[in-house]
Amino acid sequence: MKGQKLRFVLKKAGLKYKQFAEIAGKSVVTVQRWVSMNEDVGEIYILPLRNLLTNKIFNQIEKEWDEFQKEKLRKQKEWEEKRNKALGENS
Image (cartoon, rainbow, N blue to C red; front, side):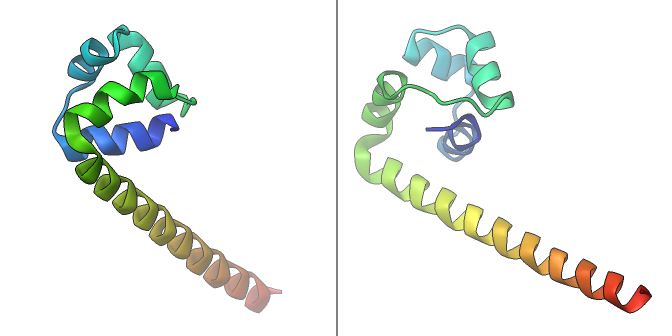
């Protein structure tokens, strides 16, 4: 799992970085780095979170993340098309 996805999951679960750090056995600074640098977070640190949230809830949150990413990409493509069209008209 990437750091940005972790941030999304924690937000949806209503958990603070400090709470997750305690669950994962890592420092808050490490969790902040994972998120801010969008680093890979080892599954060994995610397992306690999965257990806490139960797999059903965790899977729902992951599904929402995937939908969020698709919408983000759709908006980006839409913006790029508008920009390219505008640049083409200015030429």
